[in-house]
Structures are given as structure tokens and as C-alpha cells.
Image (cartoon, rainbow, N blue to C red):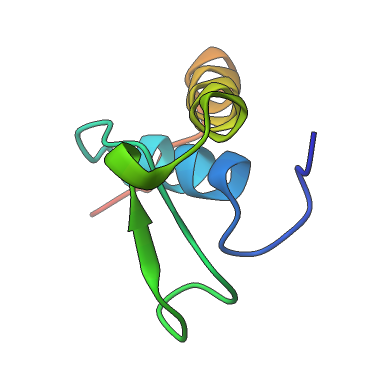
Length: 68
């Protein structure tokens, strides 16, 4: 599982959880915001799984952005 790549599915899942965004599986072809955004319909089952693993892991940690 690619948990290190900035813009990868796991990274995006963690980020969505951290910023308390609604979960929406996606990833980037390269770096986040500097490459094509790939939506769930075009992701492999493994990539979708990675997204949810990143999201769930951050939820378990309870590590969220403090907006104050």
C-alpha cells in the first residue's frame, strides 16, 4: 500500500479526515493540486481501499484541524 505519496489515495483519505471533509474517494496522478484529480469512478478497487484506510486511520487517531 502506497501510504507515503503526496496525492495518493491513502494521503487523500487522511487529509479529508483531518480537515473534516465529507469522505469522497479520490487521488491525484502526481502531487496534490498540481496534477490531474482522479475520482472514485476511475479508481481501482485497491485505490479505493487505500483511501478508506487512510480516512479510517486518521479518524481513529482523532487528529483533526483546529479551526480556532
